[in-house]
Image 1 (spheres, helix red, strand yellow):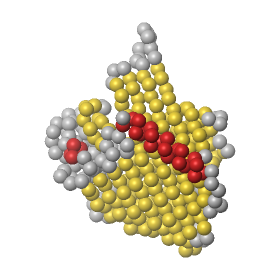
Image 2 (spheres, rainbow, N blue to C red):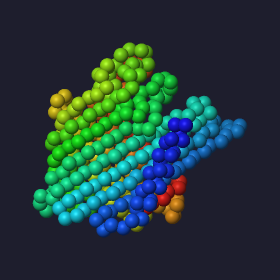
Image 3 (spheres, helix red, strand yellow):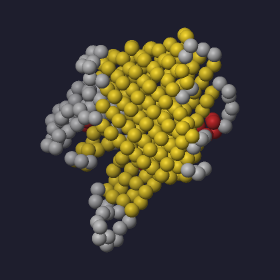
Length: 297
């Protein structure tokens, strides 16, 4: 049922946005892409070894940007979900993302805007520690969930590039699941910076965002977003980093290749040791390459 609900969310957003994209308004620039990739391996008496597997990944990205006189309003929605099934390990999640961001700017000078930036991020389904204990849950919807709001200035010298500096940024981290406050050994821990027994973490700091939306050629698109956040209230020298890169190439009308690269460092996110106890922070990297069906609108 959970898998069907995730699929229904993807199809509902794709249908709504594709209809919306058909309406014409010169003040709005809308662009979206929905992609589905599937891979399958079957082996029988294969001397080189290996095992059968099936994997799928769904991706939906949508931009809606508004420009009217001194007013600028940029919006982006990202949805992603993927699963892999193998004979020995069963079903495992390999991709899960809900990301929504909105930036409003009022022009105060040539290419300069006074701006407000808001971001929300979480995931669809439960996440488990497959490397140590595949039954130990480590995340779920709104655990964590991130909500941030910032005020500052945006420099946008080109339609495809913008830089936003928000020296006054509030970020809230939600962990709405008490199961996450215990490690695999049953010891109490903090989760994503939220202390045991709490469900919320307040942070106040500064955020810098660099964003690129660029059509390299008529059929190759690059999207890159780099966020740097420093918490004034606790270890401001430890900069949180989130860098997302999506490279899409349309091979035919329906066939495409997509490369997604996510790089994250969050000082509040700790990783378990081999004995199940909680360790320190690590630099996280995820790379997903897909070849499959895609529709753009």
